[in-house]
Each structure stands twice: as C-alpha cells, then as structure tokens.
Length: 160
Image (tube, rainbow, N blue to C red; front, side, top):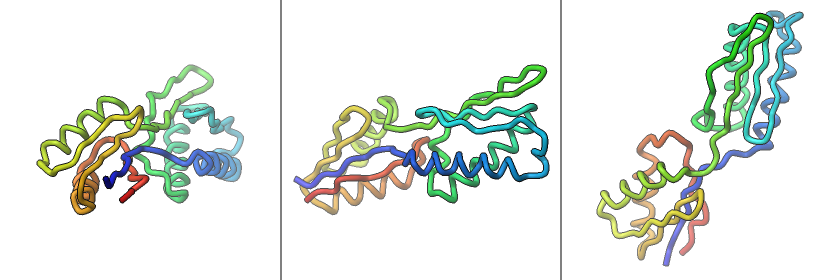
C-alpha cells in the first residue's frame, strides 16, 4: 500500500552554520562594538547572551535572517522570555523537532474529518499515512500543507 511519513525535522548542521555566521556578524557590527554578546548552540537550544534586552532583540533579528538564508523554517523556533539582571541579559531559543503527541492527534483528526479513505498512525515523533491510492495521499499532503500547525511539516518516504 502507498504510504508516507509526516515529520518535523531541522538540519542541525545548517543551524550550527547560522549560529556561527551570527557570531561573526556580531563581532563586526558597529552597534555591538565593545559589547559582550554571543550565540551558543547546545543540542536543541540556542542561548543568546548580551548586556541589555535591546541587544537580545537585535541578536534575534540577526539569527532569524541567518536561519532563513540557510533554509530553516522560523516556525521551528520557540523563544523563551528574556532574563535580565543588572549586568547581563540572556534568552533561550528552543528548536522544535518532531511532531509532538498533541499535534499528531489534531493531524489525525483533520485527516479523518476530510473523509478521504486513508489511515493515519502515530509512530513516536512522526505520523504515518497509508492509503490505497496515490491520489488520496497527495490530497492529504495538500490538506496538511494548507493549514498552520505551529511547526514546519515535511513529507518523507513516499512509497508506492
């Protein structure tokens, strides 16, 4: 039976490259001259450190520009509130990967509500959709692309 997987993945190498480029840009920008500011990538977290909350806002703009140039969807970013004290400001930006169970359940409900004859199964952090006809699967892909689910969706392993 034809099938495909619905996943939400980001290329961590491209994220690493974007963080490195952002650090280089901060080192050369005039408005960050003499300011202790940096980006740090830890597993699925980007840590922004600056002296003021204003610097963090500027740094987020730089990071977003670099990620978009590298083909990373900004919906995969989950920025936390900035934490400031007298001498520094910090902000964590989590990278969303995988389809969480709540989103997967809403995807399954939307697929079932469409009345297209396919089956959807939640498999860990992805969703497998199977059907008898390729055209049905392509309709499901169009349906899922047409809505905003709060995270970027990719469609892998399309098999006949």
